[in-house]
Length: 290
Image 1 (cartoon, one colour):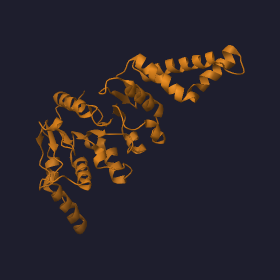
Image 2 (cartoon, rainbow, N blue to C red; image 1 turned 90 degrees about the vertical axis):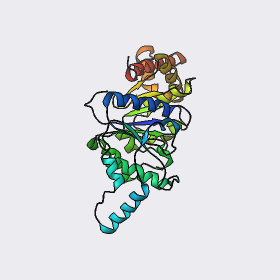
Image 3 (spheres, one colour; image 1 turned 120 degrees about the horizontal axis):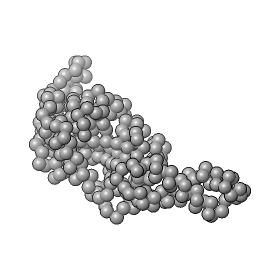
Image 4 (tube, helix red, strand yellow; image 1 turned 90 degrees about the horizontal axis):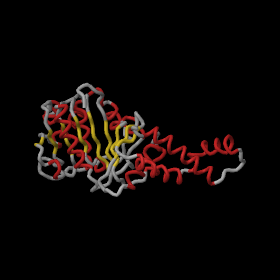
């Protein structure tokens, strides 16, 4: 990690119990050690993983009342809870509890407003949004889209935890180029129309789902178009599955082999296997850091 770098958004996907929080906890501790920047955690489940970190004073009822007053008076008002967020500059890890002033769990709308308030007010920090599926049904809302598109202006690094890809919309995939993929509840094929780099995501998911370790995960960098964290053989086995379920992917290789090498009008099994082999070797070079 370097001091001068582009603020980033990382999406972490995976079903419950696959080690997302444990892995992220280790990451934020290392982030703090190396970058010495403030880190704020909002976890709607109040997991034990983050209990060792001190809380940051935040009153969701105060924020709600302030928003109503703003509409009534048609002017921007900064409440104490927002000031606490704006003044959070010390290099340490803090968390916001998912409870109101009476100790009751926040409603879904209150959780969503908490997230929005954090993103609007915290600057120059890492923000961890745990289990965002609990309070954001869709990322298609303009108000949410704008928050994630403007992270560079606020110097924010953001990590979002999701239990599946399902709520993600194309705009969020475009804003994010770092992904950590754990074993997921949703087959990425079901949202193929939302992902520009479907092939990359599907291959990564095949690798993760085939791994015997339930806590295994991979990193994807969609800007560099790379899969990080697997062996060549793990990738090769996933590619065999991929080309079996997506036979048209090798059709260009097959056509070339039939026309130029064997000069047959109809491909035989050996031609198809050779085309598959060529496709896999090309994609090993394309997607792996070797």
